[in-house]
Image (cartoon, rainbow, N blue to C red; front, top):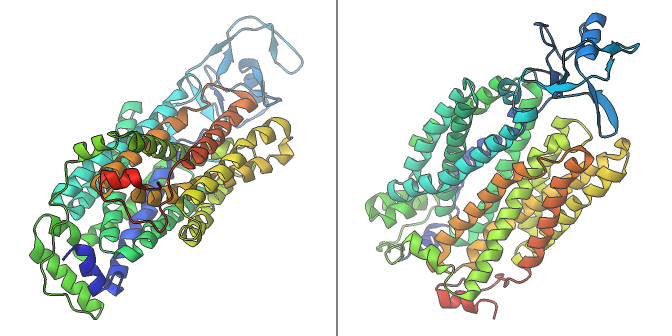
Length: 529
């Protein structure tokens, strides 16, 4: 008897499965914190060049004499139509004439390598510690790209550990790496050690979340799997809200990183509480261990485990590499695969791009905007749960991508043509855009799994997830070299425009609602015809 048939007989989502599912959802909260903490750790405060020879210089003006020194040392520049102290320039030394406010004129400027930072929002960040500003501002994008690259590597590397040695083994290997590197990160002395530890953090965070997600899904029967897969996304959103509160209360990135890492230590108790996935045990011919877990599920569900042999559903599976190649063997699969990969990349780029650009929206409090952005995930997932089996995957995904994309694209007009007092409209449109991306993320998970034939589904899903990581790796670089108002608008315009394109391309895919899942390549080609 196949594993899903056994679950149908003993209970698809009984008390014991619900308890285990509740526990494995908790890492989704810390995963949300880990994925979004970059917005706080690499926050860029207002800054200027340090005054040469003034050892006790601070961004805040200390006295009238200090103000005079600042005016004599730091030029003014126009930013978004307002004059303020230059962030990256100093006057070159020389004998200049000064106006009545002790400001030199006919003076030349030079760049600097030492800065002072505004501490009104954060007292210290990784950006201020490593001076990732001005000529080195690109380092922030590099750091975020490396983090997402670690996530990409972690999905495959720890996924391989999970398939070979078990979900629990993969979980605890990832947990150990995440805890060690999380605590070590705060002592990173320079940029290269910082990004190396961030790389490990990204990969291990992917391993923790993926292993816990798989355990929860694999112990759930087919009729409940859609709900369990989507509900876990609520916990990711809870993590974002918790992070917003933590950031508001903790203004030093070192303490924030320690507080974010410390709860992971409690997951050690999962070793004695959470069982190995019985489905994985069956695939490894460890049927006796699997039966003990299934007997416990049946006992808690007040049912009886049937006295039958459980079939190994993976016996006839081809290798992951061969499965991946099959995605491109026919024009139909190649066409659909390209569209799905593009949608995964764009929805991830938009979601993480909007999340990390919260402080560039031009209005409102940073923490409040970040909190509102996290709140947007709740209606997004809720609408998905309500509508996904009513109007279909294709229409819902397309609708979310178009709606969110149009709202995000329209921010170019509010940024360029509305006064500062109306920039709350920019924030509102960006938050709606993020909600569209969050909903699109939720739907594309389900849609992709149903669109691909069974013989290539695992490889296709893994490759699709990899496409998402490439999208999130590109997001930090969009608009990096463009300054001024258009520099703030350009990333949002790109996210919106690409979301619209992805949504429209999705219309070329077949609907999967109430359709039998394709089992082989030929079924996949005939789907929707």
